[in-house]
Image (cartoon, rainbow, N blue to C red; front, side, top):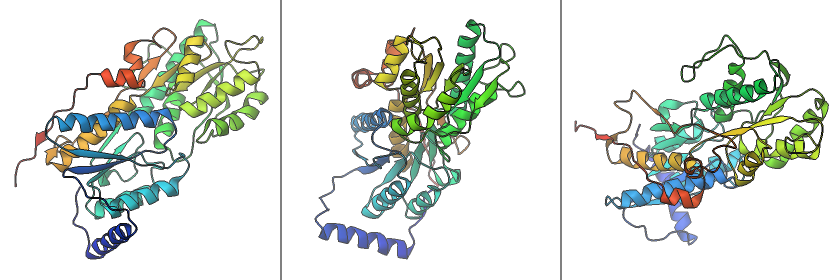
Amino acid sequence: MTRTPKPLARISRALVVVLACLGGGCQERAAGLRIVVIPKGMTHEFWQSIHRGAQRAADDLALEGEHVEVIFDGPLRERDMMEQIEIVDRRVATGVDGIVLAPQHSQIMSAAVRRAVRDGVPVVVIDSGLAEKDLIVKYVATDNYNGGWMAAERLAAVLEAEGKSQPKLILLRYAIGSESTEKREQGFLDFFDPAKTNPKRPRTGPPPAVRWLDRDHYAGATRDSAERAAGPVVQRFRDEVDAIFAPNESSASGTLDVLRSQGLDMAGHGDRKVHLMAFDSSRPLLQAIADGDVDGSIIQDPYYMGYLGVYTLVRHIRGYDVNKGRTDMDQSTGEYLVTKENVSAVQTLEKFDPGYQKARKMVPPSYSKLSAR
């Protein structure tokens, strides 16, 4: 959706640009498109893979004669929602041709996106959805519900192998309003509900009868906040809990720290062992899988996500139909189960390792030009 800027919006935008130039913030602009990629935060390895994938798309487009400058600009921490809103507004005001955005909150970020679209700046959303979907060009993300279901499926198999047909579980949530992790959590919960189905992964038998010890605590945006949240919960149920699911990298890492500190980790020497199922990847987390401390993780493909976000947005700006006649606004980048058996496989490493990403063969989507009216 592209709209003509209103007169007042044009004046405000021009004024911001003039003030920025007076402050020495203007440089001569190269020909081509300027695309700003705005992640939820800048610290997690996931977002660095997004950045590398976005730049790879620009490099591939350059081979076709399309010059694209990728600007990577986001809040330092994933809990700084107001900073993310300010970045969107500032980048629109100072002049970009499009935005690739991973919104921190599915509803609160809608107003900033609405302002961008009003000023004629198209937006592709990646990673986590936006409540007002009609504002955006396309949504490129993991099928997080399916990923949560896969995490539960893996954990149920591990527990069944130990003879635990009625396991006692803890779900450590991430944050209210984070659409991606909320879907993971729901997929995980629904797997254990015999009334629920998932067309992508039909059941092979009834799920185990689970007793939920806790599913009401939130880890927050950092490893430290996750450790603070998980610590008292694990301590309370240490003599009962069989397994824990943490729906992102920081929550899984913080929970693992707690299990290790309390002698409950799978590779530890204590009598009690608590299984941990994760989501996302980092080098320490993948090492923990290799060491047997974590039973597995559902990893995403952030490199491909960043690639598709930029490539699709550029094609849209250049007049291509990126939604098959507006019938398909979502594009999944896939979900992958990593275990001790495949943690070192090339197909795993190319999802997050910079060297393997650089050597990876990318196949861009094929879009058709919109017919002239």
